[in-house]
Image 1: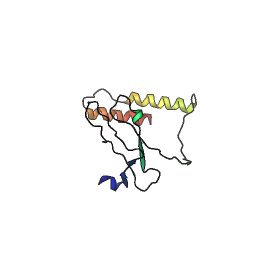
Image 2 (image 1 turned 180 degrees about the horizontal axis):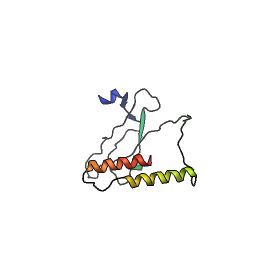
Image 3 (image 1 turned 120 degrees about the vertical axis):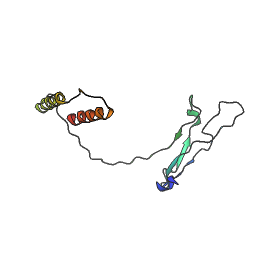
Image 4 (image 1 turned 45 degrees about the horizontal axis):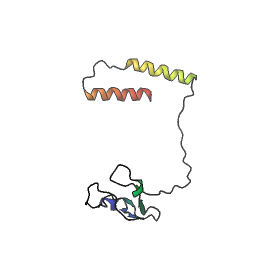
Length: 124
């Protein structure tokens, strides 16, 4: 089973009940929504069914609490300061390269994709 290859198991609801409510009189409500969660986790082994949160849909929301731990994530991004000499040079360089972009013969999707890729490279 695919779920096994990802170490997932079928989650059990903490409050069993229907997840789909029929709009047709006499037709039974159903449990048709399934949630697969991590097999080896005590905290991620169950979900809740929220029948009172059902709006216009015939399905009810399913809820799981995901614990979040404190973790410092190191990240950085390059920034050009506004109105700096570096920003002015960047804008000049983009304009110069945009003028060199040949958009006169876009007759195929491949050609359009190539030009879009070039545009992305210019701005990058």
